[in-house]
Image (cartoon, rainbow, N blue to C red; front, side):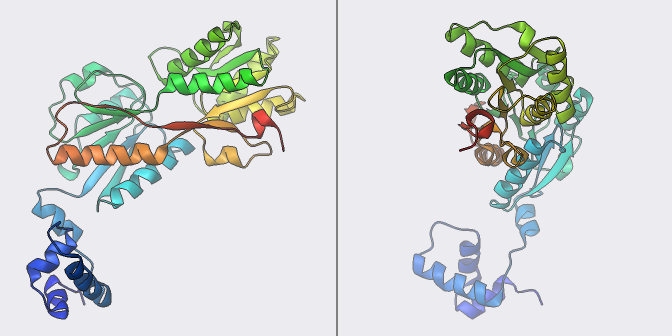
Length: 335
């Protein structure tokens, strides 16, 4: 039997309006009354009807999260954080997978699910500014990632250039002088370009040569791409004493090849990744990595959508999330 607001009101000896104010976290409720009503709620096992609550506000209670690659641990971990952040506001998250394809990103951003969602959080890869410039959908849109669109949408990202500089400076501080970059991308501007820029700036500021022969491009973001890039460098006769990878998966693929070639990590080659995914913490050699604050990114994205729904934040905001460099065995060795 479903417990109603009326049941809770009778049990607590208060009005239905008072119970409603407590359930909806109304500010003008005394602490004593809130405790009294909450006790009845707990004893009766009352659960609010979230669907009805959202419908009364003209909303669906659903936020969409569109990601380029659900199989990538970083995006999987980020999705879990967004789901948790949304749940704290009684929202459900609908996941969309774009594959990083422009046509799919356009389809998602233009609101083909407008009738079933209250807001969209999108992490684009190939989407261009012109694809969003004529967007007429009323559903709030929040962008994640490092592509700068200069459009009236909130945009949440870490400072990739600064993070990459810190990672490479860490390698330089350990005496490394031949630092390779694995994961450069061809074509459109992407986070890889910013991380490559940070790699170059760190070497330049240390008076070291940013040798383009130590830059290896990849077509994807996975283990195999990192392994192939590391193989090409070594086969071309280039033996760096350190590797900074676009992401952890590329770093882990490179580490596999280094081990197969008889090179020790970090004695012969130190390795730094990016994203701090769980897999990197449990390998035979744990991976030093730039760790974006995924929980903060998720929280700010959800709160940005809800703020827009509430009519707040008139101007578009560029919001920088935090990050840290987590030092592990791939650069420091085993203690």
